[in-house]
Image (cartoon, rainbow, N blue to C red; front, top):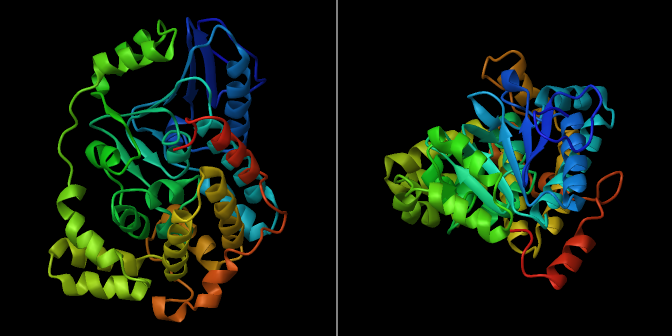
Amino acid sequence: MTGDATPTRQTPDDTTVLLRVNGALAHATLNRPRAINALDHGMVLAFADALTTWEKDERVSVVLLDGAGERGLCAGGDIRAIRASAVDGDRQAADFWRDEYHLNAQIARYPKPYVALMDGVVMGGGVGVSAHGGVRVVTERSKVGMPETTIGFVPDVGGTYLLSRAPGETGTHLALTGTPVGAADAVYTGMADHYVPSERLPDLISALSEASTETGVADVIGRFAEIVPAGSLAGRQAWIDACYAADTAEEIVARLRGHGDPEAAKAADTIEAKSPTSVKTTLAALRRARELATLEEVLEQEYRVSTATLTWPDLVEGIRAQVIDKDRNPKWSPATLAEVGDADVARAFEPAPDGPLGLAEAGAASSDSDSGGAR
């Protein structure tokens, strides 16, 4: 733990999550700027531990999360490590996801105001540690997305919960194409709440240190928030809803190609370049997530799917093409949507080898006891 204010608890030799308390504000900074603050297992555990400590600390009235450097809050999980785990056939990736998803649920149910500064790149796991919070701030630099189909994976960290509840079929569009969005569309789809220009973030952080109540936090945010510049998704809602309401991925692509809007045709091209297995499984995961009542239930489903992807050739190949060799030319197997059968998709939803996360029951209890909590 570092910082020039009162420390809460020392984390030996851990500089990848900077933790400090300043006034009423507990401040966590993801600190791997060269990797756009990508999450590794140690960071997940350190942050979860800090949240538990701060929940009990009477000095702390509000928790703030941001990222070091100018590039973004968090580019996601450490996918090099996930690929290595898939290649080696060990438990490291599954153990990482298990603790990460517990952290996502912890954030969603956090009893104190939780402010996430979603400045710059916020992808995958970065969405998981920000978009489930109570106060989510985007800037003109925000680039928010779930790009998992690009690497042969499926949206996780509660991403299918968020996207399945976006207006109409916009979440389906973003999930299948992996398209990131700016500030306005992040607010429109329900992944963010407030727009604050990036140059005002230091002053916002300073003001939050004096906010001693939830009302005080709202007042501070109100002083800094501005009208968000216009986005694009609302204007595309009609063709998105018409095309993505289809029952199958093949029919979605056919509708996109036949619609006539150039953006729809571009979306079809994008989907067909993604992992076919990922696209079909993502569509099924989103449709199932709509029928699940709580974030915790969706995280349980995502854990089953995530662990299943460790056996897919596409996960290893997709990460190779995007971040190892960077040739951007993955060889998917199967290579087309038509070759991915219903049974292939269904296998991804079978129980995880190591059992459930144990979150669903806790989520149901929390929902019964209060009106806040997970989005």
